Length: 280
Image (cartoon, rainbow, N blue to C red):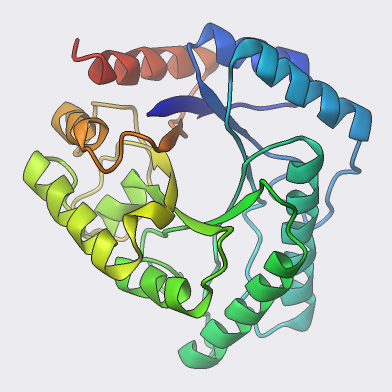
């Protein structure tokens, strides 16, 4: 499994790649623009091509873009729905220019809208985005922590998207903290086996293209999105050891989204790499 960090690019792509390389990353994730704004950053072709070369030289591939948090393709407000689709289309275009393999997005919330109606609207928006996707780029839908009306909190619901959108460049991202918060017991080999078996039935493990590795301190099934340091929460060393060792998951890519400073990033990467090597 190739493992990396979510790296901030405010200091430039050179610094971002240097930080990822120093941490021992073999993959990485970035935002292409402000994650809390509906205004996407201008695309700089030369900078994105340089970023792609920097990653190749450092051996850090694949790279993912995480779309802005504001995306809600299910919104009944046309301005929010249209703005969300534009943000998604923007990041798919950036990924193509920067030779980034994955564009990872949250789906948003049903809010007070009829669930079937909102699900259909979301599928239509995703179909529009996939209709113009470039070769080599994959759109991956992230599971939610299952709170309130958030979409995609269960493998069953992700499976509904899988069946409705059989596009070959659509996949899924499993955030371990979100999965735990939704009631999936990932802190043991048996729990991981059950999760993988259900994922195969619901969506097909081959369509899980990305993981977000985050520990969490919330109780199982709490429905709260709280990331924590690797091995220091309820998933723990045993859970991540089981995920990394599972034969169906070894060829996947994982990104850490753990909280804290650059020093925390280094510590979490050292921990997960030690688990991967059987040294922790």
